[in-house]
Length: 394
Image (cartoon, rainbow, N blue to C red):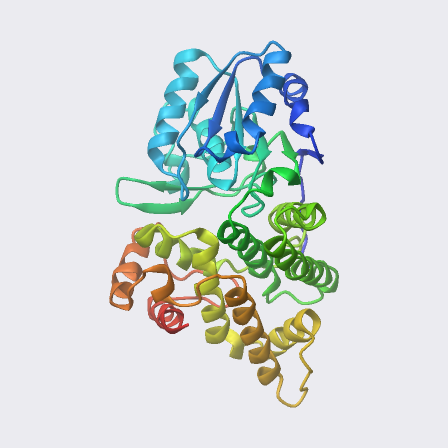
């Protein structure tokens, strides 16, 4: 295990009716005038918006709403939010929704007190040293942004879907996690969220660092929890226990609890960002297509790690003489699991086209330090093209 520093200062308020605590928590963390960031109408249909804003009203805290954040959140809403914060003298940002609303809130927070373009933080032109405080009311168990040190925004000029440098500065001050708000999610969103969680775990699990048995076991337990809970939530959307397991797993999958002390990969996420930039597909859906393809391409680098995953998570029989065969059985089980949840497993199922693969590779080149990427196996342009061609076939 490598040396590490782990600092995760977010307060989590978990359970039914916890949105009523928003007003007190905003005050606890120094807020007095709030920007409420939301996406579509779902947060008003499931009651999260009404509960949170009623709590703000009850605490005597004025607020303004920035609505209309889209999936794969765009820079336009970030600029709009920065303008509202500055123009109205707002000092706290509350995201109500999923990862898109939360990432937008984080980006607004880091940009509001900066004299330049917030995108400077994403290009590396400026370091992130301070931010307005951010709180969240989570309504989609998926991205893990409610506890993470990162955010992803699409810069509309150039259609660049990039993540900012990871920093504890942007972790939310508090996050309200009420699983009942996720019961009204469509099955596709529930399944996309489950895939996203698994991907966050596996980006950390596939590592070259030796002697990481503890975090291996933690990661495997989280994946198995998703495999157990997701079908239950899909079969019965009102299964509170399954929704609770998914909501807490989504946070643990991405707050880096299972990533400390080990090298991490993140190649699948980098490639999926190109897919969703080109086709605006759900992030989890794109990962369902890309991650098994990446696994097939790199399995020869460490067959025993893939065999360990297959045997411990899916119960595949370990073939010690041919561990790669065991590993490939696990990859097949993972892809079949995604398919059984109604997730896409090929380009055609998300409306992507194999002829666009060279353009996606070229688009990736626009990012600083574009190639190579990945911590488990270094991925160059030819590798990325090969992986995407496997993904295209599914």
